[in-house]
Image 1 (tube, rainbow, N blue to C red):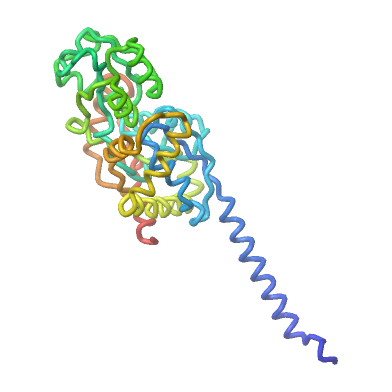
Image 2 (image 1 turned 180 degrees about the horizontal axis):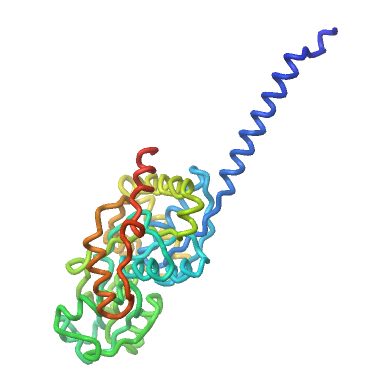
Length: 329
């Protein structure tokens, strides 16, 4: 045998090493093509999710995202019920409706946004009290979580009910223009649209919703996602925990990414104004005990005949995915 010939043992070793390399390569390829369909709203509530998709943390955990941007979370919920999107964020009322209609499951609480939901009035009207909205034309995305809170909790607190004012159904990204054109007297909106209206001298800040509702925002998954891809959900939440560190320790990095999004859409606001909007979003992915809170939200929806039954919270709220993500982080 020449010095260039291989022994049988060497051939087997080489073949084994090649197979191992091929196996690792295939494993990496499989992880890289684990695609999720991510829904998110283009108001401030959806921007933590937008940051997640731009941060590289999903890729770090073997996930790629196909994004579906919409004006508000209740549209994402409808897409999920229709099976068009795998994951998306929205507040309690929209989640409850999605669970009742389509078995959508909450896998985490991503943020609290009660301070971002606000009533902004036309500056020229000099409105300083909520009860002065009686008889006024108010832009509201009826059916959204903020819209439901406005109709069912906030206005009744001040003695105002449907019929005491005129609601103009409108997407949140169209409301500032309507306020400027004076086709509405006030808007029920979320950041950054409120700070834009105030900074541009169009609107005046009246109240935020945090005193009535802390507004936890859930990351929800379709029933199919939960049943067939639980490992992907855990990896996905690990990426969220990585992103949360940036919100905690490098807010400027986060703000730069999200500010660039709004600038690309033609929104005119200073970095300082935008920072004010972002300061009202409390990002802390986890899963606090919210059963009593959600029960009250469900009872309001039943009273208003929006839903007929209360969800089974043991199936609708799934903290176990986040527990596994944190255990493996």
